Amino acid sequence: MKPGKVILIGAGPGDPGLLTIKGRDLLSQADTVVYDRLVGPGVLSLIPPAAKRIDVGKQAGYHPIPQQKIHSILMEEALQGKLVIRLKGGDPFVFGRGGEELEALASLGIPWEVVPGITSAIAVPAYAGIPATHREVSSSLHLITAHAKEGTPSLDYPTLAALSGTLIFFMGVAALPSLCQGLIGAGMSPQTPAAALENGTTAFQRNILSTLEELPEKAREQNIQSPTLIVIGQVCSLSPSLSWTEFLPLHGMRILICRPQKRISSLSSKLSRLGAEVIEYPSIQIQERPLSLEIKETLLQLSRYSWVVFTSAAGVTSFFQSLFACHLDIRALSHASFAAIGPATAGALADKGILADYMPDHFYGTALAEGLCSRLTPQDQVLIPRASQGSRGLTKILERHGIAFTDLALYDTEPVLDHPVSLLHLEEGPCYVAFTSASTVRGFVSSCPQLSPQKFHAVCIGEQTAEEARRFGFCCTVSPEASLDSIVDCFCTLASQKRKKET
Image (cartoon, rainbow, N blue to C red):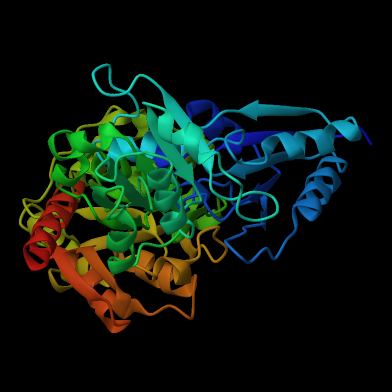
């Protein structure tokens, strides 16, 4: 069999927005993904659902999968003709053992490519307001590992202490006391500005600013843990005036978005721009129903219906797919009026060339039904194309008013049970989740039965979604409007309350 290819991709230091465009494009085509512990959950969430996932993560003092075994995994997968993505935190050639892995592939003639990543040496200090170089205080940058193949390396402290530039130490938290003592002993001023930067570019980045002499004690007091980057040099003194991430409205918040994958990007980008660490965690997927006899007969008799009512953008998409499958187009709807539950649904309808005749002031099913009933007569018939698990709130109101309707199930919402991001791992820190329907709540819980909902704060669209979340034990905030902007506003309010508690 012709061998496949291995592509080493630098995943960046944690923030999924720092994954390169080329890296993201190639990741979406993967047959197999082999990834490290330092690859952020936001990047892991981008792994295609159908791809085989292999976790080879190592941490200090615990290497469950030796490096030679990782080489074997890459070779075995590639020799099956697969496109293998090797995801490595930061950049694969900056203390990432990327060169060792390529040498192993070369020994068998397996093709490879390298997609460089944004190294933590640059990104993490930048997120703390520390420029790696500055014309007035540092004209050179030196990257040093504090961990060698056989343990702690033998560092040339006199040479390092004599450098006038910025020193950045990888994997140095355990060796921090000896690093600082070694540099001071070699002649570096004890008052040299220094920093320990933990969990860089994530919602939980912590920046400990101090002097070379006092940094080990401050790091110990704050219980700084790996992964931590150690920065030493005059550039650290610029952090108080150049820091920026903590001023973003959603700084310090990790938010999971549970919408279906195709509808996730707009909310994700809104939250990311405001400083949140966003993890795309689609908890449900939309499965289109086959064009059954019931669906076909209903669509071939559209002239019966004076109103077509849409309760979601997904319903609009499914309706027109089924319509075209019946060899019909919008001309078959020329007699009808259209209602949409909210702006997103109305926008999806407008994309099809149709303007909504009615949209309620409050974007909920009950408000949609009440508003419709004031516009309908007993002679009107209503078609509601939507999910098979659609809320009964809307149809109950129509029944109570004696309005004839057809509830046409065009698609099913099913839970996504296999996901590359471990929810149990995310419980290590405070976490927030956005629910846009009751089905996203059920899918979220189904994906991880061992989940402790009490550790997540949920922002929900509508009281019905919130009721479902509370049933599982989530602490809930209900957005005033059933819109993405209202959800974003809720998170901003929660972030403001969180900051007040911390000060």
